[in-house]
Length: 222
Length: 55
Picture 1 (cartoon, rainbow over the protein chains, first blue to last red):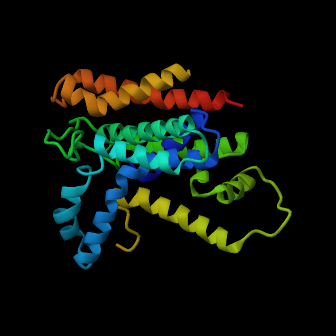
Picture 2: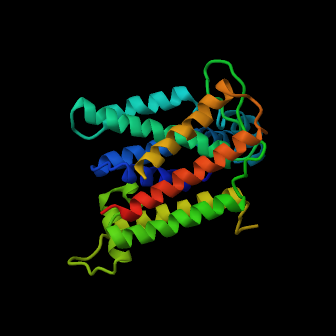
Picture 3: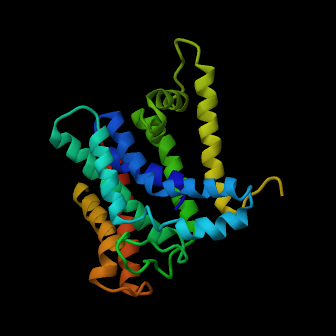
């Protein structure tokens, strides 16, 4: 599934699990996206191969994606980091955040088995040997099922911001969420908005749209 | 509803990590197909229901 879908699903999961501190919700939400950190290898390969997408795909992305970060070992590593950076609290609170972060990270793998296509197996036991695991019926990233889920989550983001004054935009910071919810709820501002923050938010939204459209083959310059 | 959420979460984790080892490595299994889609629907549905009712 697309990165923004993973991020939104994980934030909703944290919210449904009654994680009270915004920092902890962010930790759980980003933990749900963390397996896709292997995209950094692809970006590095693009630079290494001087932006030859085919070479980067064949030599790096095809070999790396889903192999090293979509497994049980990475889930445990994510849990350890979440425990370490969880908001101040006792060990029980940190363990709860770490458990939810591990659940979100593991669910990422399940969602990718279902919605990333049959040609991208995950390797549950890596670094130990074991078969790649994928479903022949798994829908690919551009299939309508993934688009429907993404659209529903995005519509839900607006609806939730309107009704509860909170949204997955919180992943990018409290101020970003206040700004977004303020717009959705039609609230007037007491002081002028921060133009730098506005550019950051629009930039993040543009990157999100590109992250969704790029795998679908959308290229406005073609 | 919270119980359904956690059943779906644990089922999803099992389907991703446990199924290939404990049940079978045949990804075309119809049982896996049905279980995975049902789990996905239960997971997303329970989240939606909890968030819709939570104050």
